[in-house]
Length: 79
Image 1 (tube, rainbow, N blue to C red):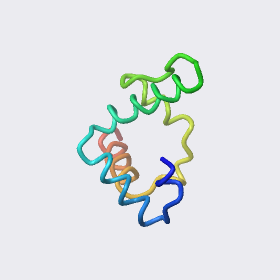
Image 2 (image 1 turned 45 degrees about the vertical axis):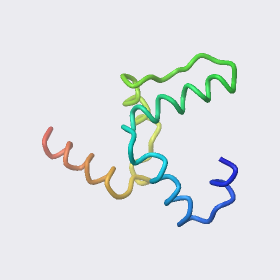
Image 3 (image 1 turned 60 degrees about the horizontal axis):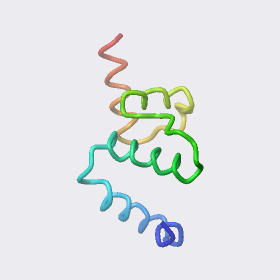
Image 4 (image 1 turned 120 degrees about the vertical axis):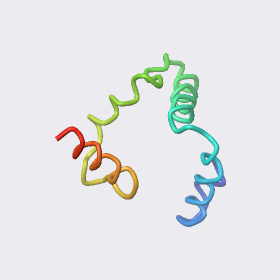
């Protein structure tokens, strides 16, 4: 994490891809929240089945790239 924080933006992007390309994002996210819970001595609040709850905390204007594209497609399907 220290190396990631010291890196410039292109290097951070490369490190992120290298560390997550073989993981399902939900598995990665659950492990992330588990570690936060452990570090803060609190229960893990979000598991895979609850990650959708994060959407309420997100500003749609901040969504970019593939995330925005996929969500726009879902919106089209759901009408």
